[in-house]
Amino acid sequence: MSENVGIVIVSHSADVARGTALMVEQMVGHEVPLGWCGGDPGGGLGTSVEAIMAAIDRAWSESGVAILVDLGGAETNSEMAIEMLPESRRGRVVVCNAPVVEGAVMAATEAASGATLEAVRRTAEELTPV
Amino acid sequence: MNKVRASVLMRHEVGLHARPSVKLTKLAKAFESRIDLGLSPDGPWVDAKSIVKVMATKAPKDSTIYFRAEGTDAKDALDALVTLVDGDFQDGR
Image (cartoon, each protein chain N blue to C red):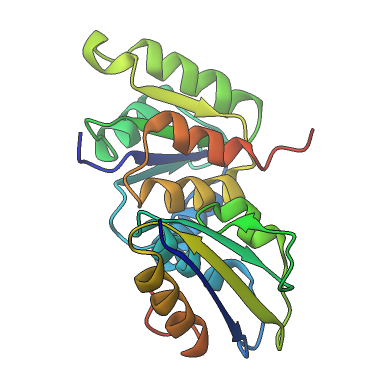
């Protein structure tokens, strides 16, 4: 497993998701597969299972994918998206319990070193207030 | 095992904030050796490969960064890290 773990950013707002992805690209670089999505299909705030699945696909890595989410529905829809993945991929995608912006940058920094999915998740979750 | 120490004055304008921390951590991770970072010669030490811990040091401009490393590539690691900090984080990987 030499591929770096991928990172997916899911926010209710397309602007937040896009901005977070930009921060990851500019602070960490392009060596981490990255996908993001935000907003509902009508252009308002929200998240969609289909968009999350597409983002996982864009960020796909054989080493797995770590998802960073903002609030409520972003998390439940991400979990639903994971359940709908092909069985061969399902076990290699995790939702991190971490703030979306900070978590994405931390997780990507860890992922850029070739760390395992579990190590990437741990690094993002180190940020979570106890 | 090789044990090496080094220190360098950090002149970066904003100190060890997000971007410099990411560069430092990424570089440290490129080496096998165990690498610690501290703000005094006696520590306390944090793992230089942990982005969360490095960023949490919040080292301000004009602080001296102390490194200690242990491992086969310890000297190369500290040479590279000192060069990065001394070069104002310009040549980060």
